[in-house]
Image (cartoon, rainbow, N blue to C red; front, side, top):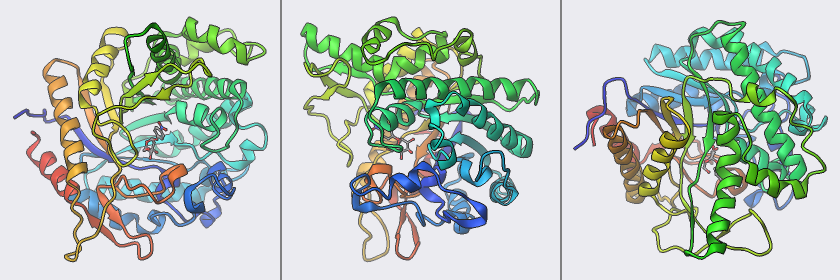
Length: 444
Ligand code: PNW
């Protein structure tokens, strides 16, 4: 049995577009996910977030679930198009929702951990080039400033960006996320501007606001393993690691882009002059913690058709409903590598979880032993890592609710709470009850 310290943070996470619904309410304008999800073929079943979990109206009910779980903290994101539905036009009604939510969380002893950007870029920004336009940094800062001004005294932790890899590469290079573009030069610009807006937001919070609220960024990291020992497979794994992990870790934590990847990517861009003097100093500004979303390792095999877009190799590992390898051992190796090569900052696991097919039983319960097992294995890994002195300060399970799983719509369920999307009934799954028990015992 391994124990967690008193100040270890247990939480659960969501994001605005995935749960809120109320897409036209109180002055919200459209985000790129509203428009992307209306293009046939982009999202399974052409699902969208118009209603989602209707959390915008049912948030009090959802806070009741958080209480049942006994979490220390709840991580959610703010929808930018609620706060600035038009360029330069602040919308107080949109902000009021987050004020109500935060007040209610605090009344219940739950610490708010707030993400500023979890992918719902306002369409007005997209129409001017979105993240590929360097002006996006200023738009983001105007938005961040308003959030800091209105909410900083109540918030326990700020996360500037969630997973710039997804927003940048899935959105502008692979085209499977909004805005659905497939242009590597655009993607590299988008990533750069997202990272720059992170750095500038941190500077703003610490400078003008002289805030003591911990702030950081969250990256999704997936360790890459070669399928075989061949030189080709090892090269493929190195490049996949560069594309997924190092392209983000290096600028944020070392203040430089990895040279081997610059060389590979130079084929796809006319020039790197969007990286201006002083940018990397801003991007690598000192933060208070480092956030990681961990889901799986990947097994990589050489693909002559691409330098860095890896081809997933067949692996015998047990899989989640996404087909992702369940890999708590590699999770531990990833954390050790970060400690050796990158950072001494406290680490938060800001997301970890699994999709499986769930069914509601006749007794109105949901038995999800596989998800329970997944969560237990990863929490156990966190406990063991802390025994090694790895200083993981908290763990947020993804997700509080079944929700809009991006390109997979409502077909993939990540929740520890089952949501009936017809009736909006919520049922805490067995994994949720087990998570509550772990939190209560503070040991595993
Ligand atoms: C993360 N990939 O997204 C997000 O932060 C969540 O919003 C999401 O629901 C969760 O993980 C589960 O998917 C990812 O293709 C989406 O590798 C896609 C990938 C990774 C993370």
